[in-house]
Length: 102
Image 1 (spheres, rainbow, N blue to C red):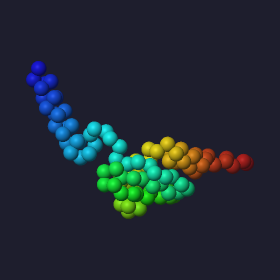
Image 2 (image 1 turned 30 degrees about the horizontal axis):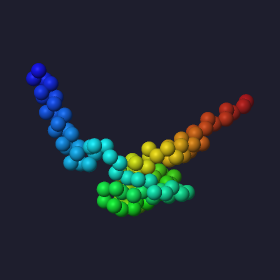
Image 3 (image 1 turned 90 degrees about the vertical axis):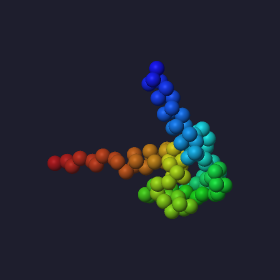
Image 4 (image 1 turned 135 degrees about the vertical axis):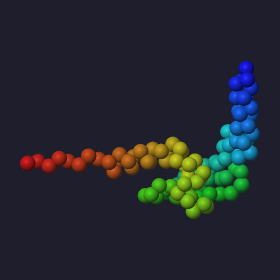
């Protein structure tokens, strides 16, 4: 019985912490406005800003945060068309080399 009470207290503390950080309840923080060519425009629902993410050779780049690894990038990386593009690129760059004939 004591263990279930401790687990409930820990769960409540985690929910409080995640709520304060904006991760709980799981409401979307960004909305995809437009995806054209190598640019994706997101609308930040929390701060009401427009964010441009550019898809490049090194991966997505957030022009708002000047970063290759921010929450905007994490959001973009799970977008279906970005995942498909990454998969296509990885198949094109990892082709086996033809064997040499003697």
